[in-house]
Length: 286
Ligand SMILES: C[S@@+](CC[C@H](N)C(=O)[O-])C[C@H]1O[C@@H](n2cnc3c(N)ncnc32)[C@H](O)[C@@H]1O
Image (cartoon, rainbow, N blue to C red):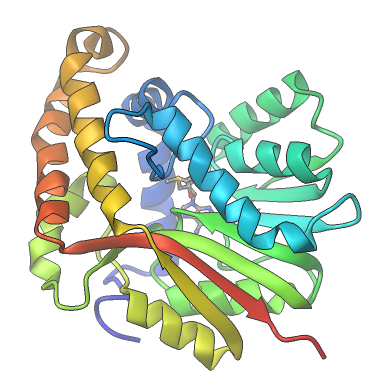
């Protein structure tokens, strides 16, 4: 694995710091207030002023379109790093499929279960606390393995993909998105922006395509990098415009951190040093 794809900390240390990050009340309040409590991932924007929640919902629909042929009432999806459960609810409602939703954060899982119960979806969605690096499932159990914006937090990305493919049925699909470095971006250019998330390094598109090919999957990549630029510009605008209101639910110091950090991301996207999109890979049938 390249140094770009592998961070310096061990997997348990990284998981602990990721859990602490997402369970910090300021961080949780920021995602809830700015994304609307369903999703925490990059949006696909119909236009540059579209709402973050609407665009993020479109990402789920687009990813769902890519695997629609595999899903129906008899199918099961494994959502790795399921967050507040926006994807799981859309998949269960749209396809009538079952979803096993796994996340490190007990706080996200508590909110996720509450929202499922409120929408009458707790019979279709099972929410599990755990790590995607050690899946407690037998081989070839799932029709689809799904993961939106999670692998950037993972130290052993090759190991995570191995696990995802192990539990996938032959003929099944792996679909995921991730924020990545452009192939020629020096790792040090990313560090100031990544510091807020506690993320040490980003993978690249070629890293994922090679890993998927090593695992024998036929993969393609929908490049939506232009939406990453729109997304960070929208986040920055939103936090600036709503900063007085946000300071009532988020500590003023964290709002100041966001106001300093988000322009770093906007700048990286303008320089085309980051990429984002959807990987879609099929495990060949027997
Ligand atoms: C950016 S959020 C994305 C949430 C969700 N996928 C979505 O699109 O709304 C990242 C999520 O990944 C979870 N996560 C990070 N590392 C993980 C790991 N090793 N195993 C399981 N979940 C993890 C975090 O707790 C967080 O809920």
